[in-house]
Image (cartoon, rainbow, N blue to C red):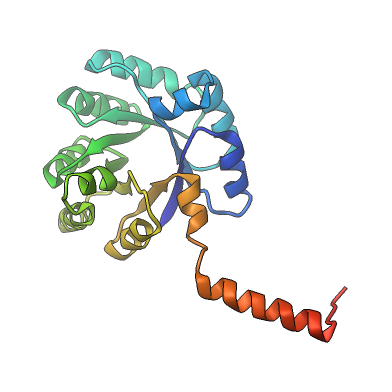
Length: 217
């Protein structure tokens, strides 16, 4: 499973990228606002930093405007994936931009039917929102599993990009159910390394090293 980082914070991306844990980046208007940076400027900096796809979201809701914005965004770098909402206008924009040869991430997916439409429109990525479904007492992983089955049934190449990932358990479940990509905030990805038995074992090793005076260099 590929890891995308869901942030527009350059330092956080760079830290994880140095460990080989970044296969791409996702941004949205809320994350851009949080960064306090100009959308074109910060997106260009992210694209220069990572090799994988960088999702940059349009801000219009009408198809022709989304297409124009998407064509502007892809001028930033070759690894831009234009992010459009899962509406009929968004799907029209997806089809046009895909036909142009650009990567498209269709976001705000909450049903397998929506995911099927996005795949038919040629989406590179479909972004089902796990956490937001959990918020209304639905199991977001059921949606990932449903989309996985539908896409596998018909050989769709659209990648399932699990979004709204909030916990390390979400990360595990995404991998088990077969998501192609998980996008998560840096804190969630970094927390995946944590386990109390690892900490306990390391403490014991360090104590023995100290007692025995062991040195390598």
